[in-house]
Length: 190
Image 1 (cartoon, rainbow, N blue to C red):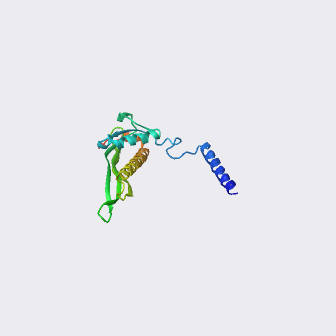
Image 2: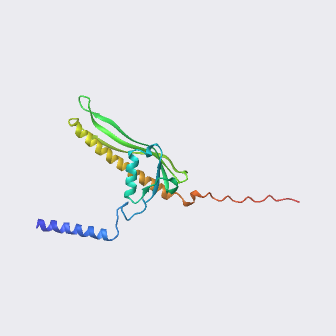
Image 3: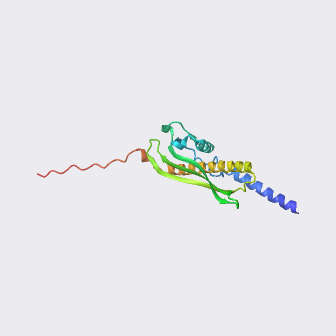
């Protein structure tokens, strides 16, 4: 009885998955949604490091691309800084750090292909806390490397969402100045 019940639940879940896949349902940013398909140009001091590579891979995975010429882009992401920080937050009885706060901070702005600022300078950070009792230092290094990689990926995804939202909110007429109303000619009195 237990196996039959478990088998029927599995069958029902498999059928639901097949139905959802066939009806056009897609997770945000996966294949069915082209809102992330942007051509972005990266600029600034933070645009040449490891973060830029992760950001480019994230953009490519959702159908967009990093371009080498700002004129070919839908927007410019100026990255002032992309930095990783590690701070001890707890100590053991003998004074060794056992808890750490890891964070990845991004400082950026968003610009039009002509260099006009759409979104002024902003910053955000993604954080993780983790515990390590210092008994296995090599394991700590490996764990910290995995957490750093996860933070970098999360920061790249968050930056991409923020940039795409700003580019969507930008009116199309931003690049063309609004016409100025004609001033009436002064009247002459006779």
